[in-house]
Length: 451
Image 1 (spheres, rainbow, N blue to C red):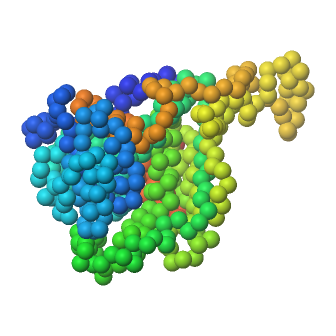
Image 2 (spheres, rainbow, N blue to C red):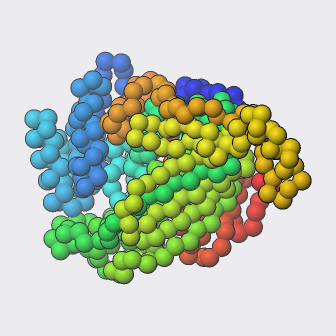
Image 3 (cartoon, rainbow, N blue to C red):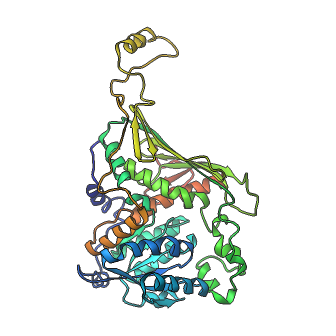
């Protein structure tokens, strides 16, 4: 990995042309015609008016719409009940009554500038492609895709369209993360060999929702919800609890690991993984779920380091995040990322140098590190003050809609985190390590090259 510091603007400029040129494209006449001017009000629609849309993304938009001269003008949801709830929320918060749609194509055939995709995981990538193909910019929730064909199709659609796309890994709009990236790039921590993250949750996550007992098939469009999936009988549990179905979600990997692996890859200056292996099982909540409630993934990156992610739904023990370097360790703290010399070898003192000489031929050995971090400190943020990340992420998207610059979590970022999570999800089921072939853009079972 390069040890030359790179700031946020330099990284985004590089990202715009990175990895097969997927995230940049010449503007088509259609897309160019819809680029808003500096004083034009941005007209935003949302597809998906359920928990995530109403509970997080719309409130985030409401917080920044005044300063960004934007407004929510359209709501779309297949389920009539959720559609009505979304319309009522916008009316209550803004005093405006947006247009309501149950058919996405009808909404896309209006004069919107951008669309927020806040549907379930199976629809993210297909709807992202439809939105940009219609000439609209898009904020698409994570995970961007739950299988590689979906990811490739969406990325290619964005490339062709030249639209501005922000993937909903909102941690990438945290100035603390960009400060972490800058510090790592400085080389002061030395070679980083391992990054470790552990998350926990006590309870049967994603089960026990009330909506499966409320929805009626005639109130929605089941065929549209299934999309390219094979026809099957209407299943209210699948409709709302798709995260526990292994063919319709990547489970913990897509829901929680996606945020973390995207942030770690940005901090370390990486994109696609080299290899991924995972394991886990349904050890706690035997409630009919198909995806694990205890899960661990090991991701190896091409520049030679390993990322480990662990999640357990059987404990709420506090999370932790650590970057292990030759000269010390970075740990996530309540006030930011904290650097210390812990793990950086022996202090460079006369006593320790004498001890190193004395134990030179010992099996145990002892080593002094003159580059060990001397004092504990918190890494300063880069490019802003840490705050609420979802409104910041939404504002970054709206700003880029005007400037046409690359947002913090562009489609290539989404493609890369999707590949890592898809590989992690699949590895546990097939029982073997999987590799990413960058040339073919495929998951393979034998290494395409050595790390």
